[in-house]
Amino acid sequence: MTTNEIYQDAKKVWNPTKMDYWEGLGVNIVLDKREGYVFYTKDGKRVINMHLNGGVFNLGHRNPEIIEALIQGTKQYDAGNHYFPSEVKNELCHRLLDSAHASMRYVYMNNGGGESIDSAIKFARYATKRTRVISMSEDFHGATGFAFMAGNDLWTDYFNTPIHPEDFTKIHRNDLDALEDVLRKEDTACVLMELITAGTGFQLPDPEYIKQAYALCHKYGALFIDDEVQIGLMRTGKMWGYENYGIEPDMIVTGKGLSGGIYPMSAVIMNDKAAAWLKEDGSTHLSSFNACELGCVVANKALEITTRPETAANVKMLTNLYKEGMDDIQSRHGVFMKQYHQMGVIMGIETNQEDGGVTLMKELYKRGIWAIRAGWNISALQFKPGLLMSKELACETLDILDSALSACEK
Image (spheres, rainbow, N blue to C red):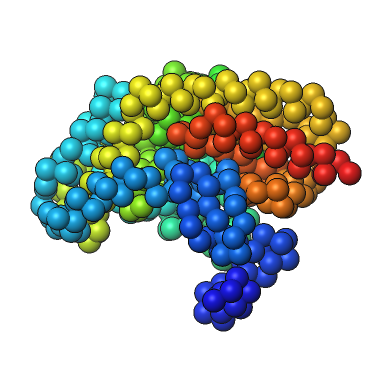
């Protein structure tokens, strides 16, 4: 089928308005051949992936080591049984615990990030015997039940999902007074936060806000849930984003890149207090595909690659290269490019136009880069290289960005 035929068919059986949106922008992508950080469309266009599906392709498309691990895994494993342990489940738990701070004790595995956010909220409510969830208005935590309720109002309002203040309270980040006003009620089970939020174009928070919010959380008996589904797994230059802020969250939620881009996996890493339910009745929360054994095989390999010294060195090289390159580009394109935000290989570009993120997204795609505008702030664009990207490919993305910005200015 041609691209147009696939889109027309998708309008009938899958998602008509989404297809209309991308066709209208001229970004009607159908992925064909793909490898590393490059994919080809059905029409033969070569595209560098600077979206990574939010970090799913942290280690690239069709990473050969991940694929080989999956192939070898199928010789022994399948989905397994969620009632029973296995060697690969235990191995993944140990790897995740070893990657986090020393107070972490248990791991619970799911399929997607939203599902793990739902789980973490349930665990916090059980541990504290409270119900209120405080989240940041600018954040997104997934499209499942509790995760959806804790996210941005744009979508909860769309689906007529009313927010009950006694259950889900949203405040703006960097507002400590508003946070403490709610925490003083002493009915909050958890504060849920993306430390750096994609929806705004990765605007960096005030570091002191993160530290003080964390301290207030514990002062009033709530748990702190760190949503690292998008920013974790070495994307900030450290294994976990919280390491940049000097805190030790009660729960870390990870996903996306844990899949290796091949097999859906997510997890909640938790300390002893957060895991209270596990020690009283660990059968009260379950899922048929929880800790799927083939998924564990893939996730173990993804973590092994992510934690290699060579990977950390490459992330450092990319961080420095992009810092130098983006500073230069900013100095020459200030008319359109307002500023950029960067931590490790997480970057967001803010423009001086209300919908500048959309304009830049289109111009980048014309020149062979797929990057996406920010969800809640379409004046901004997310710009995200992968952990293993080569210097040559990174330099190519900077050259294309330079050209795209020139076109935007015209």
